Amino acid sequence: MTGQADSAGADPSSGPLPSGVAPLLSAVFYGTCSFLIVLVNKALLTTYGFPSPIVLGVGQMAATIMILYVSKLNKIIHFPDFDKKIPVKLFPLPFLYVGNHISGLSSTSRLSSDLAFNLEGYIFVFLNDIFTAANGVYTKQKMDPKELGKYGVLFYNACFMIIPTLILSVSTGDLQQAAEFNQWKNVLFILQFLLSCFLGFLLMYSTVLCSYYNSALTTAVVGAVKNVSIAYIGMVVGGDYIFSVSNFIGLNICMAGGLRYSFLTLSSQLKPKQPVDEENIPPDLKS
Image 1 (cartoon, one colour):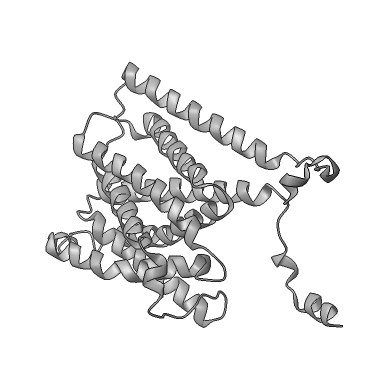
Image 2 (tube, one colour):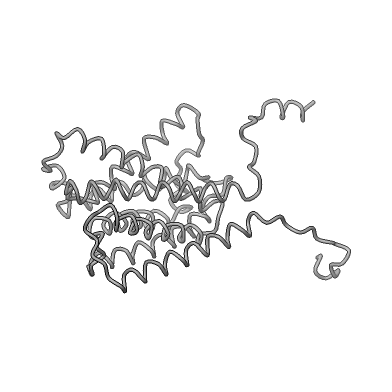
C-alpha cells in the first residue's frame, strides 16, 4: 500500500529523461542562453553605450534573487533556509561566480567584432575562461541535493555577492555613471536592460544544469563554441569585420576543435553501455 501511495503522489513529469538526453538538452540550453545574453549585452554596452558592466551584473544578480525567492515562497522550488554553515559550504564558489560574471560582461564591452587586438579585452577574455572553468568544477561539487541543491547554489551565490559587487560599483564610480546615463527614458533600452537581467538568471541556471548533467570541461567547451559562433555572426551581421588570415584561421581551428569535442562527448553519452559479465571479473576486483 505504501508503494502505491508513493507512486500515486509522484509527478509523472518528474521522471528521469532517457540516458544521454538530459546532458544534450542541458548543453543546448546553456549554449542558447549564453549566446542570447551576449547579443543583448553587446547591444546595451556598445550600441547604447551603457557605461557600467558591473551595474548590469548587479541587476542580473538581483533578478536571480527575486525569481528564486518568489518561486520558493510559492512552493514551486525548494532550497534550504539560511544558516551559518552555508557560507562555508559554498566557499569559494561566490568569488568565482562574481569573477566569471564581471569578466564576461567586461570582455563583451571591450571587444569589437573586427577582432582587432585589444590587450584589456583579451585579458578579460582570458580571466573569463579561467573563472568559467573553475566555476564549473566547484559548481558540480556543491550541488549535492542533500545539501544546497541547484537552486540553493544559485540563490546564495547571488545573495552573498550582490552587496560586495554593489560596493565595488560605488567605489569605482560605475554606479554614478549608470545613474547619470541618458537612456533611462528610452523604453527600448529599459526593455533590453530588463531582458538582460532575466537572461542573466537563465544563464546562471543553465550553467548549473549543464555542470550537473555534464563535465565541467563540456560546459567550458560549449561556452567557447558559443563565443566563436558569435564571432562568425559578427562577420556577416556587424558590418565592421576586417578580414585577417590569422584571425580567420584561428576562428576555424577553435570551432573545429570545439565541435569535435562536443561530438565525441555526446556520442559517448548516447552510446548504450555494454553489459558486464560479472562471472569473468576476478574476485579481487569485485571487492
